[in-house]
Amino acid sequence: MKVWSKGYPKEAITLSFDKASNRILVGLDDGVIDVIQVTNNGYEDIACVKAHQGRVTGVAYDAMSNVIYSVSQDKVLRVSHGSSIALIVGVPHKEPIFCMLRDTLNKRILFGTKTG
Image 1: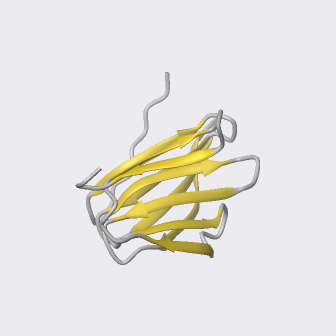
Image 2: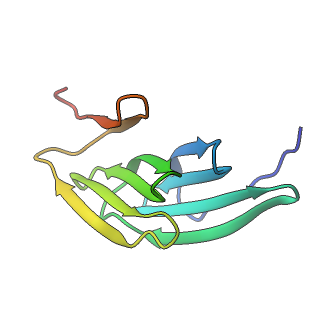
């Protein structure tokens, strides 16, 4: 087993690992998403971009379409390009979003708010 760490100036709130691509996504307290490629020798930084106006509370990567899904307390479900994190579409919600799950079997994104 290999162990390595990466420090951040803000609190890391959420992370996900896509085993098909060996890619880690980290969502930070200040709205930043960090995309990291795991390699045989450690890791390589792919992108680190301020994607949201609030705390990132959920991230997921779809290797088949090279897309990142993210949610935040800024009330937006964001769909972005996988390498640049450039916005494809932002879907507003009426409440802050506190968690997210990518259901690959049924091809859907589930997210939760304080009311459900």
